[in-house]
Structures are given as structure tokens and as C-alpha cells.
Image (cartoon, rainbow, N blue to C red):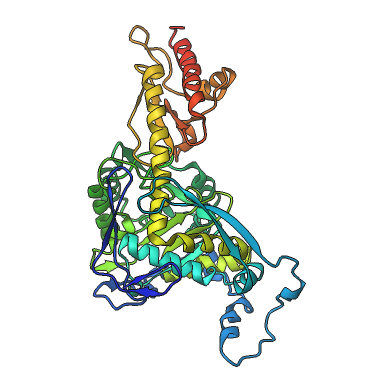
Length: 481
């Protein structure tokens, strides 16, 4: 069975393949009925007791919100919650216009007007469930099954947060005690470092290269782990279009990382905001969440998705999919911190996604990834013209970043320190171009000649000029101005 956009079941035969805009097939696995029994062994709730932090264990449920589901029991008259009366709300309806994916046989987007009113509008204006607006959660669960092949009988669930960053913060708080060891790929998304440092985690960097995280580096770390030291609790990784490297981890390495997670008993936190921004020539590698479903035992992958890069950054909606005990701990954090994600943005999001349907959503993400592929090509062509011989890089296959190493020494003089920080922060900025030095992404500090440049927003007409200005600074640093 497969679930359509409004949550009803439709029969399908096997799986469906939808062609990527550049010919890459995206496998949409047929969605089984919810909570289907499988032969996969699911880790028991007791398994996660040693992973949950003391802070999270001490957090108590909200006595009121925990009873909200009982209000839906037929015949019950609720005197429970201090919810405002919707008759006092001045907003009665909304009308939004969206650009819909092209219909079959057409090549251009069409605009659709969507109305939000009645019970849907009432839900958008009222308090809601901490885990999320039920129709939107169900829609995303169906997408996870179609995209990653995971069925609901495998011990995972979906919760909603205010973007991936919200969930990263709450997952770290749910898992990390002071002094705990955690593994992070290096270089790493800089937004996680302040959180881990504030929790006094012991950060262990794992090397990366052009094929993503190096499973050989991870294996070496674990095989040589001090005997009396507790093993790391989790590995944090961005496997598609990694920030800052723009690189995508190969399938072979993902399988090796999963095997190590089983052997050494750690969790994998799969932060994947660029999954739908994959535009590589090869078939998209399966996610850790999908690959785990091939194993005899599941429950070590906690996956984060975000709508920020494909629908709206300002709408602030992300999804966590993973083991129920961990998501329950994160939901308790949400209940005490901000109660829930905005009901109104959830209803708006569900209305848009429902109008697309799953196939329409995939078409939309194909258009988004093709947009970034074209921007990548424009940027790389300018890189060859302006920084050829002055920088080294690997071509990104997803996301919106170039990660390149500046060659600050010329062949005649080897005296310049291989560090981009001063050059990028001061000299490049003074010359009218702004980028990030690679030191911002090193988990344990240090120096590096690498630079991160984003090509997502810059006008194609400005790319050449920006890299020309950077070229001038590099030549001057090399004594070749």
C-alpha cells in the first residue's frame, strides 16, 4: 500500500521510479500499512537508557499537555486546558499562492491558489501536539517510507521541530553528559560546536576526504580507543553535500560506518538538510536511515530532515525520525521550552505538501536540485578562470558550498604560513569579498588553508567579480601581485 497526500491508502504494485531532471532515477519505495510487522529486530527501549543524559532523565512531562490526546475521546467533555476560545481569534481564513511543479507534458510551473479555512484554520490558530500537527506528521512518515524504505513497525517515529538546528540542540541535550565522548566529522558544520562545547562534551574529530567521512579513520580511532575510557555515544555527520565541504559520503563508507556503529555500540546522528539537493551524476547513495533497514537489528540511526532548503527557510520546520525513546526525550524538551512548533506554519506547510502529493513533491525537489547544479557549474567555471593554479578543490555533488584550499606559497618561496584565516577575514573583506575561513569548521581548532564559499544566493553576474577579487588577494599574498 502507499499513502497519498491526504493520508488515505492507495494500492500500488512494487515500487515507483521517478526520473531526476538530469536522468537520475529516484526510488520511491511502496509504503506499507502503518505499524506493519517486519522481521527486523528492533532494539528495546531499555537499550537507550545508557544513552539518555542525566538532564533529560530529570525532565518531567507536562501534566497538562500529556492529557491532550484524551480530549479526542468520543463523549468526553474537557475542562482540561487553558486554551483560548477560537471565537476570539480575528483571523478566519488564509489564501496562499504557490508555484506548483509542472504537470505531465508541460515544462513550466503553474501557480495555484490554496485556501486555508474551517477546521484546518482552527487547528492552525490553536495550541497543538508537541510532536507536531498530526496530518503533517503522517504525511512525512509516508514520505520516509517511500524514500527510505523504512516501515513503521521498526520502532521509529517522527517528531517535528523548528528546523534541524532546533533538533540538534535538543538531541545533544538528550544524549550528552559532561565529559561524554562524541565523534564528529572534520571539518564539521560549525553550528554544532558551540552546543557540544557548552555541554562539555569531549569532541573526537574523524577525517574526511573527497568521498566523505573516512571510515578507515573512524575504525582506527575505535580500534585504538583507551581500554578504560567509555566509548563515544554517537557520531554526528552530514552525509549529503556536507557543510562545509559540499561532499557526499559514498555508499561503501556508509555501510562500513554502520558496521562500526553496531560493533562499538554508538548512535549515528544523520543531519541531512541537503538530501534533496543532490545533483551528482551517479545514483544518489542511500541514507544511513535506509541502509540500517537492511540490517537484522535497527535503532541506532537518528535522522534529521529540514524543509529550509527546499520549501522555506523562514517557515522553520524540521523533522526527526528515529528511536522512540530518544524522540520522547527530545519532545519533553520541546514541551518545556517552547511547547510546539507554530501550528499555523505547520498547517500552511501541510496544505502545500498535500497539494503537491508525493510525486509532485519529488518533482519540486528535482527542480530545486537542478537550480543548485546550474549555480555550482557557473561557480566552478569561474573558479577555473580566476583561481586555477591558486586553489585546489573537489566538485560538490549536493548542497550549496565549495570547499577549496588556497595555495598560498608559490614555487619560488615556501615561507607563507598555510592558513587562510587572516587573508579571508581581513584582506579579502577589505578587497570587497566575504567568505568563511576553514578554521571555523575545525572541531578542535588549528590552522588550515581551506575556505568555504556559498554559491546559493550570489548573483551569477557577481560570481566572476567575487572570485577575481579573491584572486587579487591570493596573488598579493604569494608575492605575485
